[in-house]
Structures are given as structure tokens and as C-alpha cells.
Amino acid sequence: MDMRIIMRRALTPLAVLMLAACGGGDDKAGTGGSEQAQPSSRTLAETLKGADGYGSLGRAVTNAGLTGVLEGVGPYTVFAPADSAFSSAGTGDFADESLRAQSAALLRAHIVPGALTRSDIAAAIQRDADGKVQMRTMAGTLLTFSREGQTVTVSSDSGASGRLTGEEALASNGVLQPVDALLVTPQVAS
Image 1 (tube, rainbow, N blue to C red):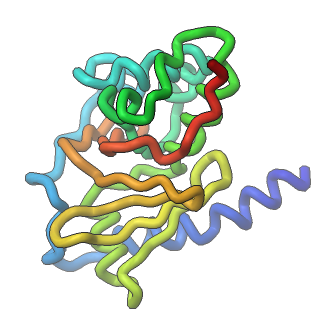
Image 2: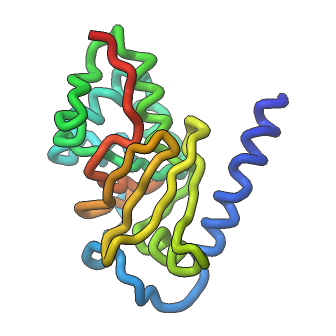
């Protein structure tokens, strides 16, 4: 019971951010990408499964047993590291059953509640006096979003950082936001 109260208090700032991001007006700040993606009838799990270059993330989802969550109601925003981000971090493959807990921890650190498009994030950054917006992940960590030119950057409270890249995918239960780096440093036993 206490955990639910803690989660509600932790997610309240995110709800305020999401409502602020839905406000009217033009997004003159740009999003670093092309026009907004069109909504799909596919779930996040189906979208991830069909996306080229995200095999490592897909295997981590399967290994962690979170496919059902990403097929569920949501909405969620998944900050999706590409295969190259896993390779650069030297983490190897998260398909090994012995890495189930690490897979789940990695995924929770890359998912925020709510469906946030890149233009939502850019608009929230533009509205903030400091030009930075924070969102709490499902792992309870904070992701901080800011701009470098036309690029939206994201950093975690562990010091990992990346850029929102590629085309976002709007699923029936959330948004898949490509990111060019892992937003945590996973503890993978050798």
C-alpha cells in the first residue's frame, strides 16, 4: 500500500509535464526529426518486434518477461536503444536467462509512463525556464531532457546520456522513442 502512495507522488510531476506538453500552440523549437509519426494499431511489443535494428532490446524484453506489459493497455514511452548502443556499451546479449533480472532493470530504466512524442518533449523543454525537463522512469530513476541545437538529448541520474534519434513510432499503447545510447550501465556478470 505504501509503495502505491510513493509511486503516485513520484509520478505526479510527470502527469503535470504531460498535461503541459499537450497545450496548444506551435512547436517552433523543432523536434530533431521529420513530421510526427502516424498512430498504429500495433502494440509497443509488436512495433518493437517489427523494428529493424532493435533485436537486442527485443531479446531483453522477452527475457525479462515484459512482452505482456508492452502488449497491455499502457500507455508507455519506451526510450529504445538500438543494437549499436548495446554493442557500444559492451553489454552483450540480454537473451541469456541468467540475465533476466538485469534485463528487467535495464528496461524499467528506459520506460516512462504515458505516451510522449518528440514534439511533446521538445515543447516541454521550450516551456521550462532552464531548458530542462525531468521524467521519472519505471525504475524510479530520473531522465533529464534538454536541447543541443535541434537535437533532444537525454541523460540519466547515473550519468549515462544519449540523443533521441531516428523516427519515433506511435503504437496503440504508447510511443517507441529511438535513443542512440543505453541510459543505464547494466551490471552484466562475465
